Structures are given as C-alpha cells and as structure tokens.
Length: 435
Image (tube, rainbow, N blue to C red; front, side, top):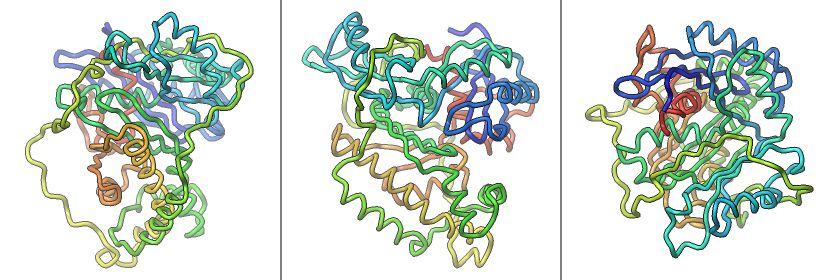
C-alpha cells in the first residue's frame, strides 16, 4: 500500500498527461492533474529521441499542475519498439516459467531478443487454475532496450524517482475495471479502446483478466490527416478544427459506403494477423519491466451471466437529439465530419474485427461493454456512434468516477472535459493503491 502521493505519467506522442494521486480516507484522491503538448520532434515513431527536451516539458507540467510528489509510475508505449500480448504456455511452476520464457520470448518479438528488456507474469496464478486446466496465460511485455533507456533518461533528468515503468493496457485496466470490481466489473467481458495520436490500442478483459491486445495503425492523427487533405489545411489547423469543430453526424449515407467496403475487406480475410512470431536470435535475460506482482482475484470468479456494471449516479438522463446533416446545415462541423467519415469507418471496422475475433475465434465469449478513451473520444456523440456501429454498449471511459477529487478547483468543467484522456495516467497513479 502506498504511503504517500505519487505521480502517474502518460507520455503521448501529442500530449503528456499527469495525475498526482494519494491515499484518502474513502479511497484514492486526485490531488493534482495537468495536460501539456508534447514538444515537437521529441518522439519519433513512438520512440523518445530527445530526452532532455522531454524532461523539460515534464518538469514544467509538474510545476504548472501544482504537484508535489517526485515519485512516478510512468507508462510505456511504442508500436515499433514494444510488444504487449497475452500468450499461452503449458501449465508450469514459477521456476519452470522463468526458464521457459528465456526461450519463448523469441517467438513473439519482431526484433532481436538480445536487444530487448522483458517482463512477464501469469494472468492467473498457477495455484488458482482449475486442476484440469493444462495451459496457462502469461502476459508478455518486451521493449527494445534503447526505447526503455530513453524513458529512464528523460524521467531521471526531470529529477523524478522512478517507481515503475508499466504498459498502457494494465494501467487503463486499473483505472476503468479494477477500481470498479465491487460494482460488477469483474463479472463482465470489457473492451478498452484507447484512441491515441498514432495508434488505437484494443484490449479486452475477461472477468478482470487481460485476455487480448491488438494495436491498430488508425487513430487521431489519421483523422486529422483526412481533414487536412480534404479541406486543404495545414496539419495544425486541421487538428484545431477537429478539436473545436469536430462532431459525429448520424446520417448513414455519409459513411455507410465506407463501412460496407470495410466489411467486404473483412470477409476476405480469414484471420487477423496478431504479430506473427518471427525467428529470434538469442535469448534475453529478464525481467526488468515491472508488470506488477499483485494477483488478480478476478481469476477465480465463477462463470455465468454478467452482472450489471453500475457506476451509480441515479437515473440516466435521456440523451439529446442526435445531430444530422439536416439539422446542422452547411457548417464547418459538417465538413469536418464528412472529411473524417471514411477514416472513421475504417477505424470502426478494425475495432469490430477485433471484437469478433475475440468472440468467435478465440474464447467464444461476447464482449459485454466497450470503454473508449483518448483525445478522439472527446468528439461529441462519439460513444453513441460506436454503439450504433458495433451493436455493443459503448461508454466514454471516465477514470475519475471512483476518485475523491481533492484538487483546488474540484471537479471542474475543464477536468471533466479532459477526463477521457486520463485513464492511463490515473491507472499509473493508483498502481500502489490497487495492490
């Protein structure tokens, strides 16, 4: 259990997110928070290339947020230099797993095993598995050493004490699922869809256990580029238009053709390629990544009908009328949406393919609920759009729902607006409190 406040840090390609969280009388307390643009040219292809500049930005963000702690849990992400995935191995003891993973990791990484830092942990402790179960699931995280060292260098230059480097799916799972275990979250199959700048990460938790991970190379920047190309604007202006004018219109004709085209492509593919295992070169010593050693009590939950996942708050108000091309007219918001529509359709198709793959070709278990978060999730009516297209209940991931807000401004409109961007930072900040 944490003895004091810590920083949860999420370093994104476009935005740095920070949450200072400490233990309170009723549970975790949010003490300070902040977001700031990631300096240009600091991150390239998901890899930190200028640690000193990033350290300066982090230091400024901590100061502007009014955070006091110097201890940090930081998430790590890189589509090109990091692999995070559950793998299945024969049931074995902890000692046997250590030896097995020295060689098993080579099958799952697209770079030389001699150049990586590795950590892993059983998703369900072997002693909690049914006696009849012959295999076990292990979460593998493998990152190129240079990428991890760049994180360490940036945080060290920011004069922070690094408590852990953790992967994003586990962080967001803590903030949106683990913290809600007492309200039925472990009785459901929940998908987390994190739409970042360069990548959309789809993670599926089955009764509290991370069971599926898949990155998709369509995300917020893809939408911005579509606006830029269609409206003839520079990228920065297109990003502003997306943020300030962007919306979802519920006119099927505006995006149905693209969605149907995506469905036809999906039918032609026999399966999703999930990082096919390349041949490695040498074994890697590990672990160094800190995936945590807490045991997930959800693993022992009995199967059955999922319980209702109720975050409270009384009756849900009736949703407002949806915007359509007819009632918004020829506005910039409409033109922005029409520019984004084909790319949105492709993104929906990729999310649907992932959910279908998990449900029909893997576990034979349907996803009960989807939480979507990230900057793109702030588009008005985005969750209703996904609900319509996926045929599954979709909510905006709110990592603040179970926190006591102890910031000077309280639960302000600004904090509420940025909350869909904070699940990973919150998940890092509550890491010790969830053990």
